[in-house]
Image (cartoon, rainbow, N blue to C red; front, top):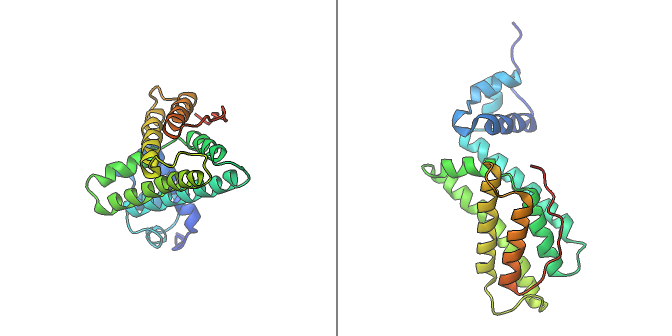
Length: 202
């Protein structure tokens, strides 16, 4: 019998793990079984990941980097911070699947490393909103009297809550998410957002 490869590309392992977690959940992820699916030796998976938590955290970080890169590309050409905020809301609605976040929250109940990672990842999204709002305050587009951090907290909480509903199949669909988020931003910042593009994959 031919010896199984003891190395595998990081991307192959991560993608296979992401599919397995999406299908069966992090609790059912078996790294040895993952190696079998990839037709590599167990050490080929262990070379990149120490345990199931390490796998999930890596996937979450990849997704966040991708989202932030998409955000930079989408917002850079826009002139006003009101337009930028509207575009950011559009992106949040389009990327509303939070299946991996749900797995991370479950891990975070008992795993301090997962809990710290969740706080770091969530903080990056809050900071993204807060920086955009502070920039809009400096140009006079948003009222200087509101707390950018508090507005960011509210908007991200709404994104998370509505995204969970959409992910598990409850009532919050893309168009409703978009309407609620825009309405909240308009009231909190005393602005008017355009209709935007609320279309997103189901």
